[in-house]
Image 1: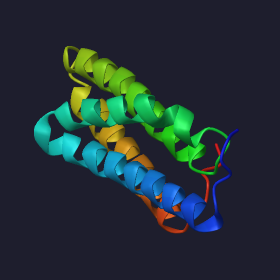
Image 2: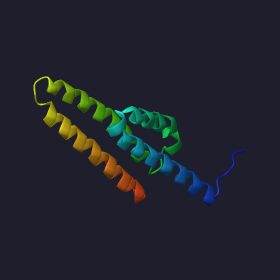
Image 3: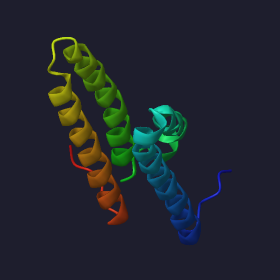
Image 4: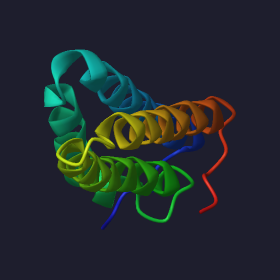
Length: 118
């Protein structure tokens, strides 16, 4: 027989998952200082806890964070390529602004208990 969770237990679980999402936003932001190492830690948290937030409003944050990591990595690699043709400063600046925007937007939506609409 499976146990039904009470309302306080559901709220506690949601708070824990919300705190994990906030942790990942912080790890992504710290990636600018650590050379991306903390971003990898955030990626691991996302993949390990994705099933726990499936079908909740927090799932959109976890997907947003995963997309931020993978697309950020892709655009960063492209920006590094453009350094070879002397346009890297522009591409790198655009990628940096895009990543900062996604971290800030996601954290603000998380703070307001809102899912991210793609």
